[in-house]
Structures are given as structure tokens and as C-alpha cells.
Length: 164
Image (cartoon, rainbow, N blue to C red; front, side):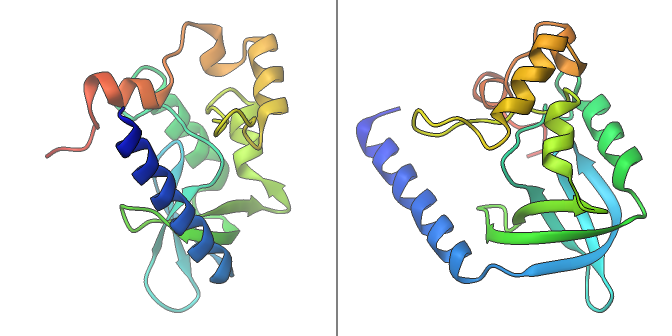
């Protein structure tokens, strides 16, 4: 990636974070669909379902090894259950980004600790769930039981799983 691309990406990320901080709110509703290991749909009491990307994690793409297992684990944990989402921002795909909680449990932390997702860092900083990821790696839980390719590298080499 060139310096200009990195600078633009950093600027856009900063804009998303700063806009998200200004509009942070809590969304409550029932999970009515799980797209993949880090994306779900929450139906609030009133209004349309909201697509939520779980903040602080990156799960395998649905078409990459362990992707279906990550989606199935998330669905088994949250589908048709009430959750709270502390929203932070919206991403380039117009998904709400936020921390998802079920009965007080941080679902992002649970996914990483269970070996279903990574906790990617940014600019030499550890990800928010780095301790959980280290424990899962050490215990060889989930995707750590085999050689796993980070989703960002998978997308770089194979593209998105989404049809064009």
C-alpha cells in the first residue's frame, strides 16, 4: 500500500471514529439473523432490523476455512435472544459498529476467547481482546487448532466472499 493510500485510509478511519464518538448510543433488540462470525442483525422493539458489525474483532470470512463454524457459534449464542449494542460508528458498508452484550457478557470477547475470531490491533497497539486471543492461541481453541489465515489477508488474496 502506498503512503497516499495509507494516509487516506487513516484519515477515513479517524473520521469514522470521531463521528461515531459523537453519535454513540445504545441499541436494544432481538437478534433475528447472523450473517457471519462478526455480523448480525438486531430487531429493535420498534423500527427495522439493524445490521451490526461487532467492534474489535475480525472473524473468518464465511467462504474461508472455519468461517461457517464461527457463524454457527455466534448464531447458537445470540440468535433470537435480546442483546444490547453500544454503537460507535457506521462502516463503509453502512453497518452499525458496536460492542454487543448478551446478559452482560461481551460477545466480542467471548468469540475471541472461544477461538472464533481475531482481535486485530492497529498501529502497533494490541487489539481490545488481545489477552483473550493469547489464551485461545495457547489453548489451541477453535481456529487456533489449525493453521489459520487472518481474514484481512484472506480478503487481500481471494477477495470478498460476497457476490459481485
